[in-house]
Amino acid sequence: MQDASTLFDLSGKVILVTGATRGIGLACAELLASQGATLIISSRKQDACDAVAAQLTTDVSSNSKGNKAIGMACHLGEIDQIQQLWKDIEERFGQIDVVLNNGATNPHFGPIYDTDLAAFQKTCDVNIRGYFYMCSLASKLMAKNGGGSIINVASVNGVIPGLYQGIYSITKAAVISMTKAFAKECSGMKVRVNAILPGATDTKFASALIQNEAILQSLLTHVPMNRVAKPSEMAGTVLYLASEASSYTTGACINVDGGYLTV
Ligand SMILES: NC(=O)c1ccc[n+]([C@@H]2O[C@H](COP(=O)([O-])OP(=O)(O)OC[C@H]3O[C@@H](n4cnc5c(N)ncnc54)[C@H](OP(=O)(O)O)[C@@H]3O)[C@@H](O)[C@H]2O)c1
Image (cartoon, rainbow, N blue to C red):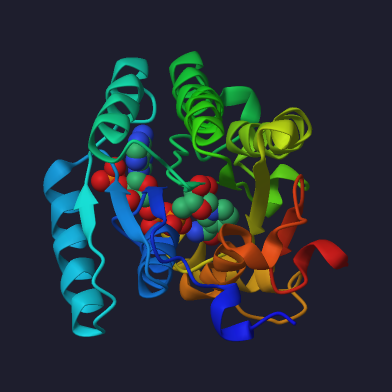
């Protein structure tokens, strides 16, 4: 019989979270660390990564789990930085068990037809090429060590394009498709690949929408639960996908959206 107390245990696992210095990534990193994993905290700024890693290490050791966190900066739009990140991970740990591809960008808010090519390129570089290359390098290192779990943070906007978030929405649709493609081709390597589709979540990323009362009220008319999410409300689904609890789940794209996509 399965034991619910160990089903979500991540002791001995090495987990990389990108965009882990605030918002959804930070909330997920905190929960994953609390289950015994060693966390690699990544974003563009080394200082911010180190600060979160130090805090997580303190929090976790006070719970006597004995694990730790370290910071490794990486700009997801820069190929050479992604290559360096994976070289460092392999040298330092020799393994990776879970990757949460979470860091993303959305530089253009406005009509899709007015998106300039530089903003288009930047959004694609980080949100598509960055996610693709991370999935590619992660799956190969996981395969060397008997498998693992990749979790991509997509968005409800990948299903229904967000108004004035056209290119961003296109990239999130690509993340959903990428998740299924990697899931199909990596299952033989014992690598599971899944995605979460957050709805509007109270973070810096969404502040332009959420802090504008008119936009917020208009948005909430489409959300059956009639509220935005807290970042921590994404973390439970991520823990499920990271752990043995989801051992037969791959290619799943799970809505965590207060019902937005169901109506
Ligand atoms: N908030 C929402 O309503 C919502 C809804 C659906 C999906 N999402 C998705 O959720 C994910 C996390 O967003 P969030 O709302 O938690 O945003 P957030 O609070 O603004 O956090 C974004 C994180 O990503 C990092 N980051 C930004 N650009 C990066 C880059 N080029 N390379 C590496 N790291 C980068 C940031 O750190 P630095 O700036 O220091 O690099 C930060 O740690 C994103 O994939 C977003 O698309 C969010």
